Length: 468
Image (cartoon, rainbow, N blue to C red; front, side, top):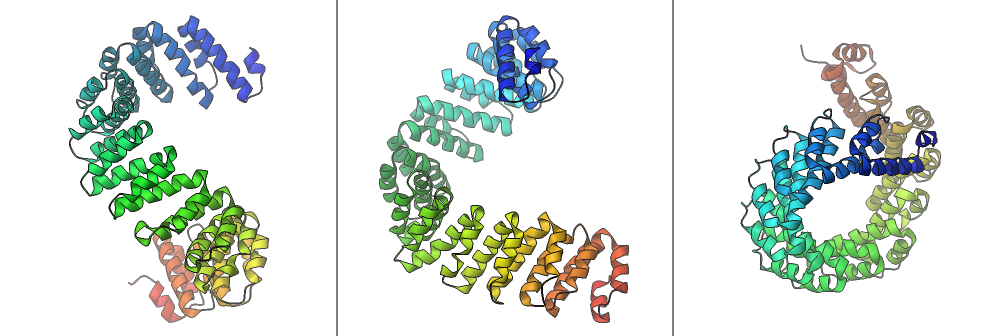
C-alpha cells in the first residue's frame, strides 16, 4: 500500500486519514477492518472518529453494537464516545437509552457526557433533567457543568435560573462558573451585573474570578471600570488580578502601568509581581527596561526579583548580571540561588565559575547550594569532582549538604561519607542524622554496620544507633 511506503510523519498521517475517511463514507465496516489491521499508534486512535461517525450517521444501531463489541480499552472507549455524540445529534433519547445500559467505566461515563452535551444544544432543559437522574459522581457533575455551559451560550438567563435550582455544592458552583464563563463572552455587561447581585462570600468571589479574565479579553477598559465598582475585599482583588493577567498577554506595558498606580487595597504588590513575571516571559528586555526605570524604589525592589527569576529561566547568564541591583543581601541571595539553579541545567561549569566569583557570604552559599542541587541531578560524578576542588568554607558546606541530600535515597553510604566532610559541626551532625535515619528505614543492617565502622564520635554514634 502507498501509505506504508511513506515515512512516518504528518504526510503519512494525513494520507491515512483521507483513506479511512473516504472508505468509511462508502463502507464503514471495511474501514474498521482496515483500521484494526494497522499498527497500534496514537494516530490510529484518532481514526476511529471518521469510521464510527459515518457509520452512526447511516446506521446507529449497527454502529453502536459494533463499538460495544470491541475489545475493552481506549479504542473501544473512543468508538463508544463517537457513536454517542453522533447519535445524539439525530436521536438523543435513543442514544442515551443505549449508553445508559453500557457497562460501568470511563467509556460509558464519557459517552453519556457527550450525548448530554450534544442534547443540550437542542433542548438544554430536557438534557438538564436527564443529567439530574444520573447517580452521584464525576460523570453527573461533569454532565451538569457541560449542559450549563452549552445552555448559557444560547440563553444565559435560563441557564442561570436552572443552576440556581440545583443543590448548593461544588457541582452547582462549578456549573455556575461554567454559565458565567459562557455568558461573559456573549453579554459581558449582563454577566457582570448578575455577579454584583450575589451575596458577599465564596460564591460571589468564585463568580467574580470566573468572569474577570474573559471580560478583560473582550474589553479591558470596561472590565477595569466594572472591577473598580466592586466592594473592597477578596473578590475585587481577584478580579483585578485576573484582568491584569489577561491584559499582560496583549499589552504588558499598559498592564504594568495600571498595576503601578493601583492601590494597596487592590493588591498593588501582587499585581506588579504578576504582570512583571508575565512580561518577562514575553519580552524579557522590555520588562527589565521598564523595571529598571521605575522611580518608585519600593515598587522596583518588589518587582525586580521576579523579573530576574523569570529571565533566569531562559537566559541565566544575563540574569546573573542583574543581581547586584537588588536592594538587600537576602534578595540577592534568593536571586543567586534561582540563577544558579537554571544555569546549572545548561552549563554547570560556567555557573560554578560565576558562583565562585562572589565573596564568602550568603549570596555565594545560596548559589553553591542551588548549583550542587541541580548539577547532582544531571551529572553526580561531575558535581562530585567540582566539590572536590573546593576548600573548606560555609559555601562548600552548603554545596556538600545539597549534594548529599540528592544522593541519600539512591546511595546513602556515599551521601553519608560526603556529609562527614562538612566543616560546620552542627550542620554536619544534622545532615548525617537525616541521612542515616532514612537509611535505617530502608537497610538497617548496612546502616548500623556503617555507623559502627565510621570515625564518628561515640556520642554521635549513640545518637544515631537504634536504642536496644
